[in-house]
Amino acid sequence: MLHNPIYLFCMVVFPLLIMFFFTSLLNDGQPVDMPIGVVDQDNTSTTRKLIRQLDAFQTSHVVDSYDNMNQARDAIQKGEIYAFLLIPKGTTTGLINGTRPKISLYYSNVTLLAGGNTFKDLKTIATLGSAGVGKAKLSAIGKTDDEIRTALQPIAIDTHMIGNPWANYNVYLSTVMVPGVLMLFIFLLTPYSIGTELKFKRSREWLKMADNNIHVAMLGKILPHFIIFLTIFYAFEFYIYYILGFPHPGGVVPILLLGFLAVVAAQGFGIFVFGLMPSLRMSMSVCSLWAVLSFSVCGATYPLFAMDSVIVALGQLFPLRHYYMIYQMAIFNGFPMHYAALHFGALIIFAALPILSVRHIKTAMQKYIYMP
Image 1 (cartoon, rainbow, N blue to C red):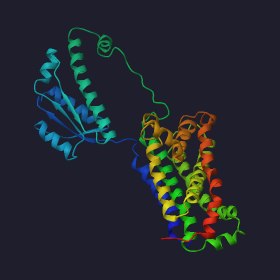
Image 2 (image 1 turned 60 degrees about the vertical axis):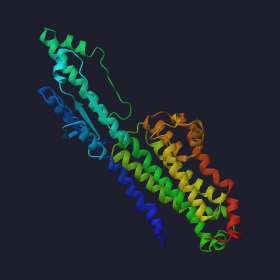
Image 3 (image 1 turned 120 degrees about the vertical axis):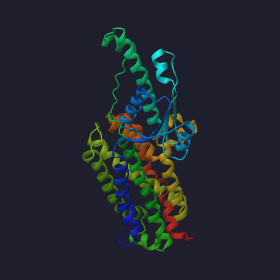
Image 4 (image 1 turned 45 degrees about the vertical axis):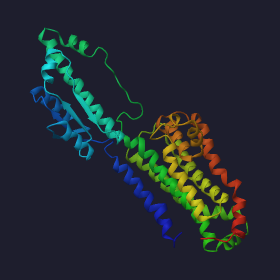
C-alpha cells in the first residue's frame, strides 16, 4: 500500500476531494438566481410590477426581456434561460374588467430541479397578479382587509417541513451520494488488492505468510483497508453533522454503527465477488457496475417503490439501498433503530458473504494462473 499510489489516491485523496466537492457544490442549499426571461406585450405599470416581483424571488432572476415568443423560445433552446413568462397585450385591462385574461408560462424540464423551481415561481407570480387586482377592486367597494383576505384566500396553508425545514438539497443528496462514492472505492479496491496477488505472482507467498490459512491471509489483507476507510467515513460524518450542522435527531449511535456496517458490507461484497470470479478484471468490472447502479436504485433521487416490481426486488441486493433506508429512519427522522432492523440485518449479511466464497479464493491463489 505504501509503494502503490493507487491506494493513497483511492483511499484518502479522492474520497476527501469528493467529500468537499459535493458539500460545497450544494453549499447554498438549493439553486438561486436561475435565469428566466419575459415577453411583456402589455407593458403597463401592473405588468412591470409583476416582473419586478418575479425578479425579487430567491430562485429566479429575470435576465432579459424579449420582443416575441420566438426569441424567448430560442433562448431556452440555447440554454440561456430556463423559462419565460408571456404576458399578452390587454392583460391589465382584462384583469380590471374581470374577463380572465390568459398569461402563459414556458419552462424547460430537461433539468428537473430547475424546471420545478422556475415553474413554481412563475405560477406564484401569476397568482399574485390576479390577487393584486382583486384586492384593489374589493378595497374600492369598501371591503375590510379581513374580508379581502378571506375572499382571495379562503383556505390558508400552513406548511411545516419535517426534518429539513430549509429544503436544503445538500442534506438530501450529500448524505447519500458521498457514502455511495466511498463504497464504490471500497468495492473496487477490495478485489484489486486480492487480484494483484495473482497478477504479480505473489499469491503463494501471501498464503505462506499466513501459514496457508486463507482467513488469516484475508484478514491481514483487508484490515488496513478497513481502518483507513472507516476513518474517512467517520471524518465525513463528523464534517457533515457537526461542522456543517446537518440534522441528525437520531443521535450519534446510529451514525457510528451505520458507518461501520457500510465499510464492512462493501468489503464483504467485494471479497464475495472476487471469490465468485477470481479474475482481477472481471471482479472489478462487476463491483464497479454494482456500485454505479446503486445510485439509481437506492431511492435517494427517485423512490424505489415507484419503479417496476422487478427493480424493487433487485434493489435489495445493493448495500447502498439499505444504507439509505437506515439513514432515513434512524438518523434523519430519529426513529428507534429497531424500525430499520431488516436493513441492519441486510448489511450484516453483505459483510458475511465472504464465508461463501473464501475457500474458492484459496484455491485460486494456489492453482490459478493470471491471464491478462
